Length: 95
Image (cartoon, helix red, strand yellow):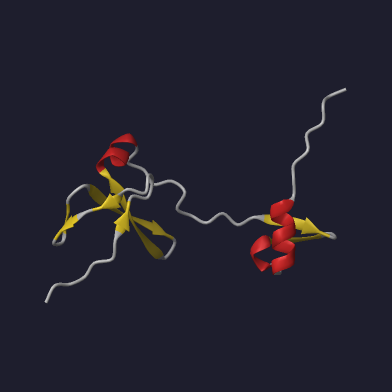
């Protein structure tokens, strides 16, 4: 019986990582410690040659102030999240 593997993709470019049994044909597996959890990431050979380091693997928590309270936007209700996404940044000219 053949074991079905889930498809894996390069963390940086999204290219599919191919396997030959348990061996990786066109990439490398990187394992990082993030506090108590281990993060496993695949990179294709091209991206690994450009940068051996892993970037953008931690989720960035965004805070905003509403009526004097600073709260993470993950805790907002659906309507507030939509309103936040629709906000536009305005830049004024220096006088």
